[in-house]
Structures are given as structure tokens and as C-alpha cells.
Length: 188
Image 1 (cartoon, rainbow, N blue to C red):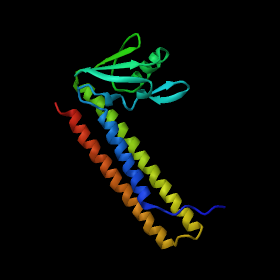
Image 2: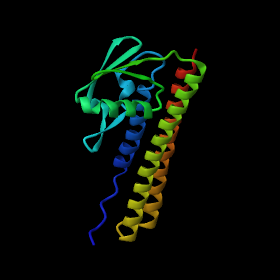
Image 3: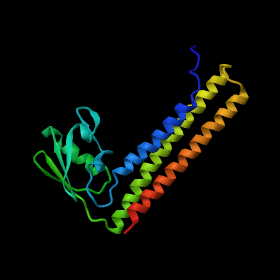
């Protein structure tokens, strides 16, 4: 049996920050009324037997402040792109003309704002799950090192506390980012 890899707390910290960065990127896609090409970044399309980001099957442009235009490169993927947009819960209604799909940004009604807040909460929960997974990986690694007698019980406890502190800090960052985005969405 191979010896477990040495514990690297900086790697755990980096991966947790990655979850927060991914959340902020996802939040960048939640626009409050203005069209933005990043709005469609989280969308993945079933294409060629794989789940691909929209940016790999089409180009997205913003011809007007409240309009997105998607030029799908392969005519056979237009329907798949439409389905992915509908499934994204972004509340956008695609209008298709050949290989071009247009998305008008709806006015943000109070109901639409509440829907966007729900989507923001889903993104935040996804980030929390990612951080918890990193925490679990770190704890498993510590257990393996202690079991292989490469780490003392005291050192294990100290490192486990460190991983828990990283997790707590990451959760605070996620909650703070969610609160800011929620306020941005709900401001009238």
C-alpha cells in the first residue's frame, strides 16, 4: 500500500477559495435587468454526447442593452441550446431564427427579482457543498496520515481544527457574497 500524500493546508485553502471564486463568477451571470454575455456562462448544452459549456457551441453577443444574441455554430444544436436555456431557470424566453437565438431581458418585476434571489441561493448552496467536499477530503487525508503513523494524534487534531477554520471562513465569505448579491437584485 502506498503512503498517503503529505497534508497541504495551503491546497485545502486554495480549493475552498476556488469555491468562493466560482460562486462570484456564477453571481456575475445573475444580472439585474441589463444584458451581459456572462449571464449565460453557467449554461451547459448536451452536444456531441457530452455536456459542454454554451461558449463551446455558440458565440454570444450583446447588440442592445437589453438583448442577447446567440449564434449557434452547428444548426443541429439549436434545439439543444434552447432546451439548455429553458432548463437554466434564468427566466429567459429564446426566440429562434435559423441558427441565431435572441434573448430579450425581461423587466425585473418583484416576482422576477424573487426568482433571481432563489437562483442566487442555489448557487450559494452549490458553493457550500463544494467547500464541504474540500473539508471532507482534508479530514480524510488527515485520518489516513494518522492511521499510517505519519502524523501524531495531537498534530491531527491541530490540522483538523485548521481545516475547520478554513471551512468556517469560507462559509462566511459565501454568506457575505450572497447577501450582497441579494441586495443588488432586490434594490428597486
